[in-house]
Length: 571
Image 1 (cartoon, rainbow, N blue to C red):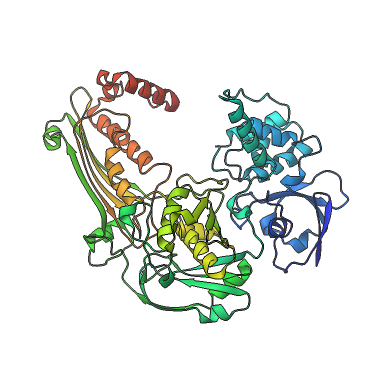
Image 2: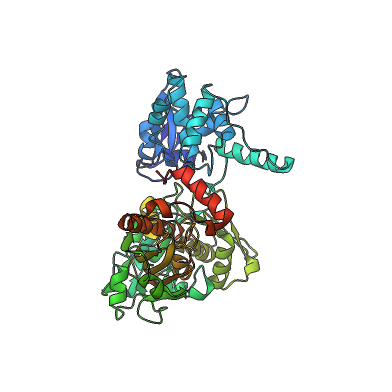
């Protein structure tokens, strides 16, 4: 039994010794404003204020995810729920709402508490002092400019910037309500949803990049005290995919695993720690198979079949398109650059991890709350995989704590919570750890781009020829789209009519790649500019090609002018 003082109220809690202060606040006291983003004290979303009991003030910022609840018994804790007073929001909360600093809102409770601690000890901080005080709080949405502005507004150092007028009273009221629930910590994200008798599930993941699953024995896990249900791939054999004609994955491995971290089995228990301990009791017999760990290896070894959906070797999609006579234009060009560019891939790292909750009512209606960007796609695939009518499946998107394209696929956790809710008759939740997010995430595709760019004597683009090799990982996801976009978006803001691209999107024994803010757009648009820079240096024609050609038209000239002004590329 421990005693905590939180927001000036005393609480007696019976918690295990390993219970963190964040878990006690969220799951025992229902104070959901403090968020779990990383489990490691890295992101700052769990920030609360703490001071010795009896001391004046609100205290200093601490990280509740790495503070044991037992160690907080001598402290007075303030969470975001305790920051507002009888008169309404704290000046920091109001400033964050007025300045547009809240964005997705997931990391902002911790950010506002760090800002409040700063202003309590230094009412008029400088910008460097604000930046230093908030350096332990990460935000993936805002770029921090509006956050720093909000702190200055709360300190009375500046007035808030004028915001664009809202078109209607109804829209203004809706916007105001959305800002307030993010500012006071009452907004509901997926992990904030809880039900009586709710189970917590965890997923067992493959340690191998490519292996056949000979057998799975879950009997010891099922017998473990506190375990209520288990799940294996044979119970969810129907394949799914975000694009209907590339359905090539199952929620849990059926015959083989295709990358390290591929989902194998699932356990639902009374709490997360029991589920984690039960996972260790599952016995999986693997036959390790050769793996291809890059797009080049996948192309060179078609005999190592990663995904049976591929009709030829490991090719997910091959696109070859040509416009104009490329070879002739290159042969007659005044200058030609041939370059190879590589992009290593990246992850989105939204501060909110993936989370899903499922509940089936007495009439057989399934409801899933998920931190997804695509609730309608998830509903369609859940109904198909589970054998339910779409009218019996409802998918709700709560507030989303950042995504950037990283939550644009149906994920294994959504199918697992749904099936386990059907099996056990109880609500089920899965919350990924940050480590699991890195195993399961679907970031930007790694690419190798061989570019040939030709300029005519006036410094205009005569032709572009691209050969693109894309590492798609174990499953198709948005790969079909990526194979097209990799070539179709290579023009960027430039006008040229003669170009060719040959793109291969490959299966490999790596985690699946998908979309991030846009399928391939950013890196594809950068390649022509980089190649032109090399080409112009070779031909000493930079002063000619950097002037927007008249053939671009007024729209493209405005685009070039805006780009020039924003990036200073002319200099």
